[in-house]
Image 1 (cartoon, helix red, strand yellow):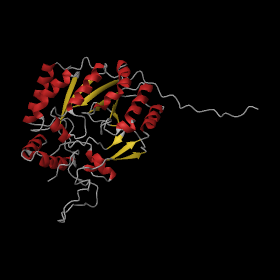
Image 2 (image 1 turned 30 degrees about the horizontal axis):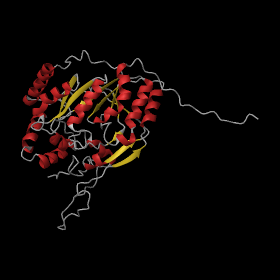
Image 3 (image 1 turned 90 degrees about the vertical axis):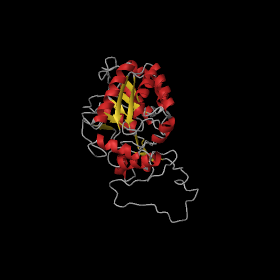
Length: 363
C-alpha cells in the first residue's frame, strides 16, 4: 500500500517497465530520520536542461482531435495521480511514479527547433496542440518561459494552435493570445477534474485550485479568446457525481464547448493509481477498480480506438447520456457551430535570422 506524500500525487518510486533491477525499501527498525526529504514529505523538484532533437510530435489516432503537438517539458510537477503520460518517463530510465513529477526536463532549445521546423521547404501548417503529454503551464514555466517563447514563434508566423491546461498561469499570456484569437489562430481549453479543492489537492496536488482555474477561464474568455472545458478524467465513485456541476461552473466562466474523458490507466499508471486509491480512499478502492474493470472489458485498461476515451458498458452509456443532456441543458455549443475553426491560410515562414555585417575599416 502506498503512503500519501504531501504535495505529490504518486506514492512511490515505482520502477519503469524497462528497468533490469528493482529497489525495495525495507524498514530496518531504526525509523526514519526527520531530515530525510521523503519522510518529511519534502521531495524536491529537479529540473534539467535538455537539448531536444525534434519538437513536433505527430499522430494519426482517430480519436484525437489534432495531428501535431508540441511539449516544451518532459515530466510534470502538477503530479496528477492519474496522468496517462507517466509511462513516458520509463524511456528515460526514471520512475513513472515520483520521478515523473520531481525529475523534470526543460527543452531549452524548443523555440529554435520550432522555428527551424516551420522553415523547412515542405512544411505544411496544421493546428498544433501545445502541451499535451505534459502541461505547458506547469509551475516551472514561470522560470523557463518556454511556452511563452513558443507562442511568440507561432504569433510571428501566424501558425494556428490550441492549448489545454489546468494552470491559471495561462493568464500571463493573454497579451499574446488575444490578438491571435482575433485572427482565428488559437483556442484554449481548461481541464477541470473537480470543484472540491480538497479532492483536487489529492488528485493533482500542484495544479491550480479549481476556483483559480475558473477565474482564469473567465479572464481568458473575457479577452475574446475561445474557451472550452474538459471534464477529465471522470473517475467512477470519486468525481463522477460532479459532472454536471463542473459543466455549469465552466459555462458560467465563459466556456462554450465541452468534452469529457474517462479515466485511463495505461501501463504503470494502473498500479500507481491503485496505490493512490489505497492511500486516499481505502474504503472505496475495490469498488472503484471493479467499475473500471467493467468499463475496460475486465482489465485495468483497454487501448482500443473508439472506446479508450469513453469505456464500454452500462456505466459508460449512462455517463455519455448524462453528459449529452447536461451539455444541451446548460447551453453549450453542441454542434460547435460557433466555435472558430483555426485558420491555416495565414501561415508565413519565419524570417531568416539577422546576420550582422562585419564592421571593417574603410581606410
